[in-house]
Image (cartoon, rainbow, N blue to C red; front, side, top):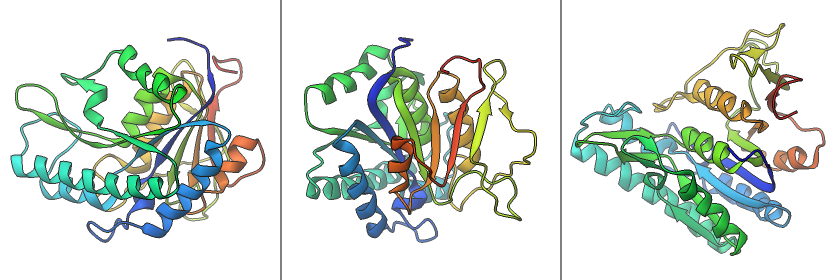
Length: 276
């Protein structure tokens, strides 16, 4: 991988639990999408941006209904169609809002990044950089059902797309917006872990005084916070800091990029590891 960091690039995940009401099937959260688009407009003045969004109560709802997972398998054809159609619909809602904000979005389907259940060539992914360097647009992709091989399909999650894009495009930061303030040391006391370190050798979190607990939201077949943390470790091990913030307060992204105080969790390499 090219070790040079794209210091003017941010890759941002709009969590499904933010842009939809996850306890209300097929229900977008227009207010949250509006707030996110406003902050992204401010960020675009300073950075190139790529957006990934989750499925929330759209794709996840149908994934659960038809028992579809990230593992390739022959799933019901109706389920494949339902998941795909619902994600197109949710993506359209976000695209329309971005257009109204003059953000010039360009939608890219998840299947553009995998082929035969393998990540596509880096050159193909790098085409996104060429796209945003020569045009005033924001590429937007999203988790969805993708064909693998021999009639098998799989759910390619937005969190996995964050890993694929971040490792290949080497942004300044990768930012996950979720419906909580960050990673908690305990669900009982609600204390946020502000900083986590990752060992380059084994990928384990280095935190001696925290007992990290994971939860999964309803309909979330892609692993909830546990998957986000797993993909974040893969991103961080490639020298890219990851930040988890509450997407209901998207202005906190400004604190991240400005190097100021913000509520959330930062995940970085242990000192002495690659990327410091």
